[in-house]
Image 1 (tube, one colour):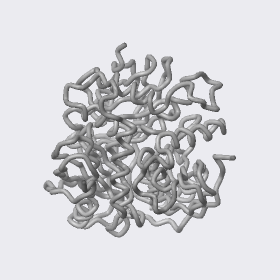
Image 2 (image 1 turned 180 degrees about the vertical axis):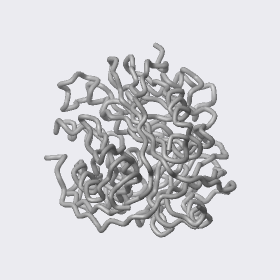
Image 3 (image 1 turned 120 degrees about the vertical axis):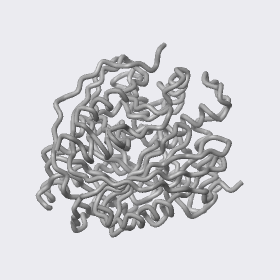
Image 4 (image 1 turned 90 degrees about the vertical axis):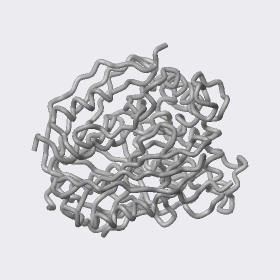
Length: 161
Length: 161
Length: 161
């Protein structure tokens, strides 16, 4: 089975815009414990507030026991399975040396490393170019509620410049 | 064993360019089922089409059951092992709640979460600054063929401005 | 247990800056074998050298058997557990087809795929907007020492323009 191959591809027309501004704001998100918290509407409101047109929005989470994830937003079962999958990748009480902050702490760091804390989404005409089923989540990996900080930055053309 | 330490480092000369333009296009990629599909030449053609000079190219995949990966392009065995590794991280029929779309669907979401759907590559003089063995892949995690959409965006100096 | 929900959120005041310049430099990092090597001070020195103000710094690692990670910088035990966690995700001698470069080679590729090689950190007033416990690491996944190349790029307002 050849697992790497060239694929039939097609490139759309190219669209250009001036880059003038970087606009930044800090989004605070109150999680209620382990799970995925959809922040797509909040990112949309940020883009509306700055009158974004074409560009890209960058997101950065300032924590080491939570992460940023673009994932399926349709079936709640998928959320459950994502939590299960992450706890299989980084189970509690698996002989971790670091356990002073509770059994969920070291697994949380590993989940954050695997998922990552930085990502971007393209923006066209002020709208995020998300796929049909995509949403942006803060993934909380600690058992308890936390206040998480996400830095939002837009680079491109916008009204605020 | 000290696992975190400072390393001997060396910083090159700094090179600057004007940022004027963001150029965007959508790349459609026809996968033939599970595997890694090299899109490095297509990204190169996009950069040539916009006459890119210095800057950065951002890639974003609009799906939740495929991902973007920068990886070794030399030995086909590495591709096989990558597929194996991902199916160990997210095996089929492992008690997933979400299984209405087939046994490969929930594992595909988990693989996409672990790998991610957004990344960037630096561009110098119109060429991607990839390492010697690096290529850019669309990783298809579903068993069947799919048409996948990748948004390409260049930020920096280019002819189209 | 509802695992996806909307969260209470709060958006800060928005701050804007002009985007004028992209500044790039290559950072060489001498690792001493498997482990996490903190490059946060080096990235800070790059930002100081270009007199960065507001913007974003992008990092890109030009290798397929090491990765870039933002993680906890406080307890050395966390570093040990991260190495353990990655070797559980991608163990040596686990039936990999690709083994011509030694037992640590294919696991290193998988760890690099899972962690990724591209990330960004926001910059405000020349300082990286890292969380309290965050540092930027080159994660070396090979057993032996390697010289690793990280491309640093700043987009935003800076003195060098």
